[in-house]
Length: 191
Image (cartoon, rainbow, N blue to C red; front, side, top):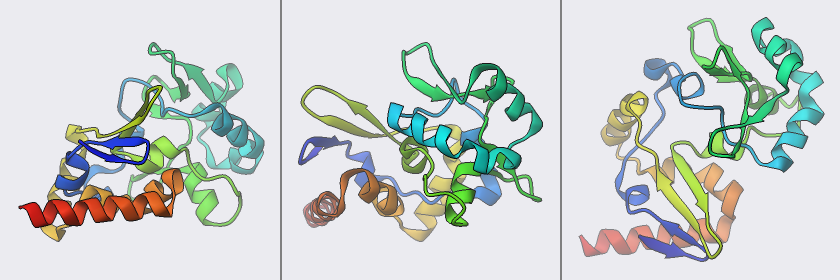
């Protein structure tokens, strides 16, 4: 474990190599799993505020779920998570012509139609955060659907912390990320 400011990072953040390979996995992380994507109360309110802007990007089934139960629910761990269609895919999924799952929130954000980015838990995946009273644990979530990403990351030699630079800076800031890079360089020198 490496401590950076008020976070503890798993060694795997530095050691595992990873690049999402959507052509191979088809975005399964948004479709499979035990519950929806974790969101904060602030993210919940922000998504509700832009829902009308992305409404027509959502499937009729997703619209039906949202009309019945809303955009999120509290899961068995007591965590606020995005609602699911048929207990599987996130209500904010949409599929392109190649059957690749995309996020309607992220697509609209990148197109400049909304100012709300996708939830940070989605942006950071496969990193998962666990908040404790004194620190935030930053861990790699190993999942079989991401095997193509691990293969591509190893082929290209891109460590997880570098692949996730944008969301890590979004969550923790530039200074924090610079310290992560310094720690990575120190770890390399020790090898």
